[in-house]
Length: 205
Image (cartoon, rainbow, N blue to C red; front, side, top):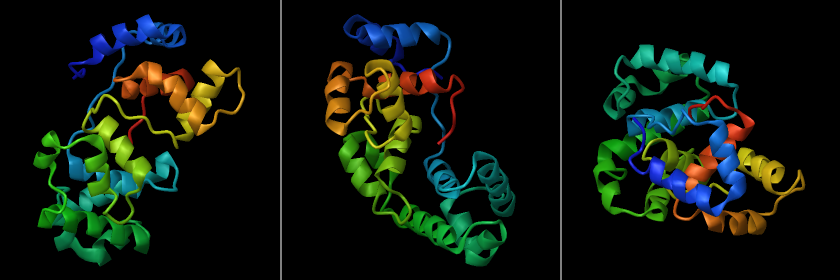
């Protein structure tokens, strides 16, 4: 389902930024879609770290088959040995179990996020082993559909800004933030369209 703010964000971005307006016109019929369950989204992000998309999909399908239902309790009950047998490294097994423990004990509690700002949620998520700021930002964009996230460390965003705004010249964090000021409060939307300018097919994080 399309985020409720999407069309308003497009109108406002288009009025302010001619480059963004041109990019959005190239992709009129696609939009950001929520990735669903918070625990599954984060667990899948951990599974996919530092391996190819194809390999990540194979391992994730094994995890799903082993757990039957991908929940914090199911992961904890399965334990390290069963997760390792799915093809996860020992470190990723530790990360998934730490994530499950955070959910199970309430240290990560999704219902609270409605009343929390982006930085508060990021701080809560990066307390989980294996979840860094980039992963937390991807979660805010793709799961929670937060509208104003700017993942300045994302290589795809940096490359897209370089090509679209700087004629291929490298873009510093300061310059990226300056360009992104015009996108407030819809920086997630602008980022998503810039990703599309590199790869028209949306990917899962």
